[in-house]
Length: 262
Image 1 (spheres, rainbow, N blue to C red):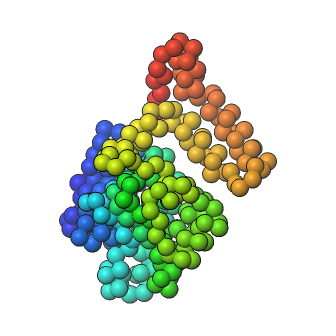
Image 2 (cartoon, rainbow, N blue to C red):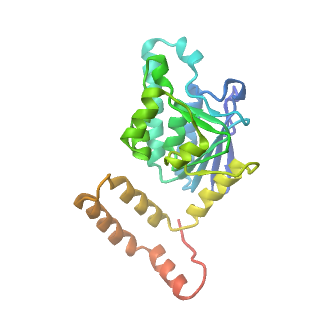
Image 3 (tube, rainbow, N blue to C red):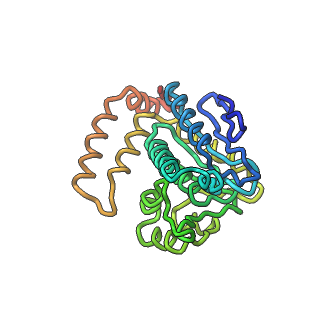
């Protein structure tokens, strides 16, 4: 798939995955229903072909994604607006649980649904001029694409409430400091190249170990619990007997680079 008929997005194939590019810079890459459908199809295709990674970026240098396209939703019946929210919420939850390593390359502002899309990714890499916000409270609304769930898991309840109840915008440096962003690139550095490099740094390792770590982290809470440790014990036992684990140990002992299989 190369893109939609309206050219609202473009999928750029890679040997190990794809770049999904939002291509509505004049509208700050605001999300439309066709863009959500396109992202869902992209995920389906990558997972079916057992690809490793997905990088999402917006066109231009002003905006990653300004959120949902309010002009589109305003002409929808109320039921269709709610259906779009449910579609986006389900899609972002699916993205967050995908075996793909996904990276949001924040080349500019990420507001509302745009930040929710970024939070659904495994990692968030941002340009220094990027900013993030969940401003729905200013419209008498609340984040509808999973943001009320994603944000507390990243920054804790107190900070999540601060951001959602004030709707304030955070510069990249502050967002990095509170754990909302993964990395901020140096001025002049290519944020897309850095995002791809991060994805490939991770995906060169054993997929079973990657999935196992993600499962364990998902089971973790604010305190260490017996349930969480039980998940770790189960996953450790499953991963330890894989071919990739044997290859990793053998490569270490033989002082060579491991060759993990997918």
